[in-house]
Every structure is written in structure tokens, then in C-alpha cells.
Image (tube, rainbow, N blue to C red; front, side, top):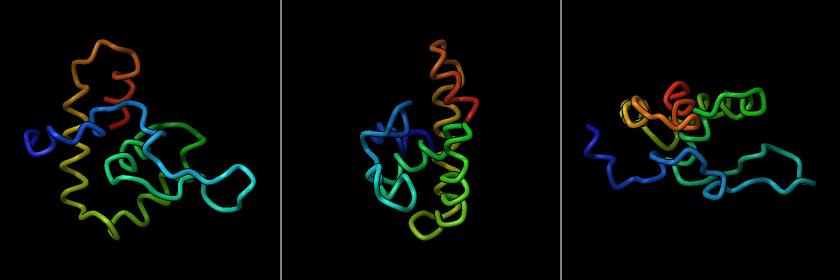
Length: 97
């Protein structure tokens, strides 16, 4: 339920890059190397061509660190959180959740 995630402010954020472990520019491999589960979820919901490879990798591997049920609960929490948002960035977050 929504109250279960009220303390998890990362799900309430639009920008979470500062919570991700990113690859250095000159390193090979994926751009995102890790981070808090909630930050990884938020990043996966950001639509865009740049994030497509990450989204594909996230969907392939998320079961290693979160159950499908908990992932859906967190996505629904995020969807409902931004459902009536007036801020344009939060509207985008709602649509992408």
C-alpha cells in the first residue's frame, strides 16, 4: 500500500542520478552500475532513447534484487504519487510510471 512506501523518498523524486553509481565516461560497459533499488526503479521509468538499453537490462535482471510483486507495488505507488501533479516534470513521471 502507499503508506508502506511513504518513507522512501526516492520514489517521490523525479531526478535520482545523484543516487546512482554511474560508469566513468572512459570505461566500457553500462552507464548505470548500481544504486538504491528505488533509484534504479525511478531511472527505469524515465522514458527516452538514452534509457532504452538500461530499461531492457532492468527488466531482465530486476528479479535478482526485488520480487515482481514488490516492484509492481512501488511502480503503482509512484504512478499514484504523481497522478494529480501540476508540475510538468511530475506529470512526465506519472505518465512514465
